[in-house]
Length: 337
Image 1: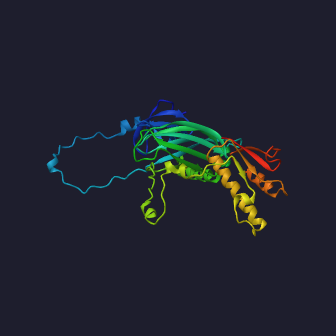
Image 2: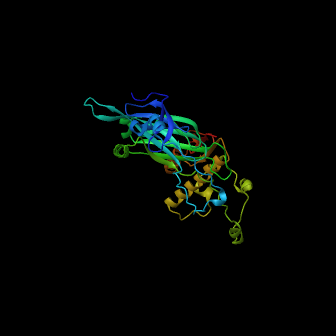
Image 3: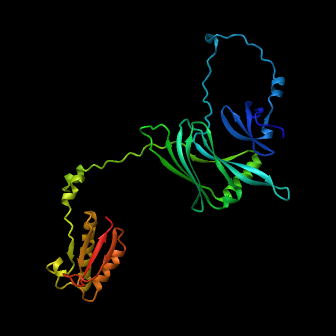
């Protein structure tokens, strides 16, 4: 092995000095430059000694005073990409035929922003949680998440994040969620491109800028009020809601006075509307139970009421048994309140 952990190195393309902090495999090492760790191929780095002995000695230049400097047009400095990224470092191995294959992927969260974030991370495969983590992502730094086997990338991995600012800012969102779904063929394509470019990792953007707080739009109610609509204070809304009844008679003559001439369908619809209205009031006002009188007859109304009760979440149970006042013509309903 050419390098060992702790060796000082120089990055050839940027001429920056750093050190080796981890041996990844026979071709790659993890290096640290100015406090930032990232993987690099061994042919992308070298020992600094050659540079030390081959550098030309700098000749001290004649001192120039500020007044004598000719002003030049200012040029804008090229801005590096801002944002937060999820980055993958493939770890290669040899198969039985001595062919190079990807064994696993090292997963990193990379922060190019000057904001510090708290985050909750979940990795799901085919909808099932496989790994979760809650931590902090410092500004302008990388964070190692975990490794995943390369054979698992075909199982529709979903990388789910919930971000919040480590230091709250008034006009920024309290938190926001981001899901990165990557298909297996995307991983294969990225790795092929990585080999062609002789690069060590590939990335997907999670977000560029932390979002602003969504301000609730206040509705102008004055126009509705001027148009003749009655406006109520929500805190006083209960006084406009009718009281719930503990016993409701669904016989048509108890509901409306002019029911003669209605079809059987119209009568049944009126009875069911009364049932729905009264059970909603009972739930809203947290009654422990309510009795609906439906009579015996052919049992059509009772059957419709029972079917509707089965689909109401707040209904704990209901029973149609003999009652000393209503016989078998009533159903008592109990709630989960």
